[in-house]
Image (cartoon, rainbow, N blue to C red):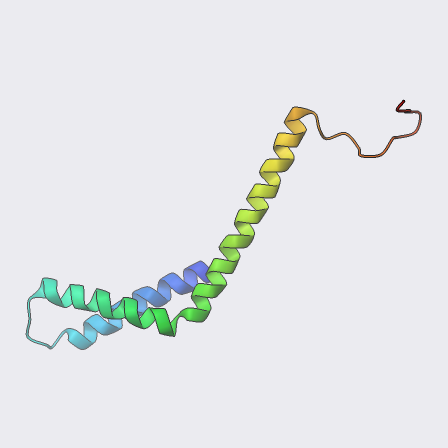
Amino acid sequence: MSAAVKYTLGRIGLFVAVLAALWFVEMNMFLRLMLALAFSAALSFFLLRGWRDEMAGEMAEASERRRAEKERLRSALAGDDQPAEDGPGEHRG
């Protein structure tokens, strides 16, 4: 399972758990939802740090792969994909 899915499910799970804890507190439903959102965000900052860091690492790797592929494609389109060294029979003068 990807780190992004784990982190997202963790955030949703924390929200549901905090909302369930606040369910029996007498208050407006909108206020209850906003408090659950705020508390679950604060808890996830501490409790889900490992998954968040793992997800950030995966995203950075994917970004680097996309950047490298983009540069490779630009180079190929510009005709710069020639070998760096002289091939057999080629002579630069």
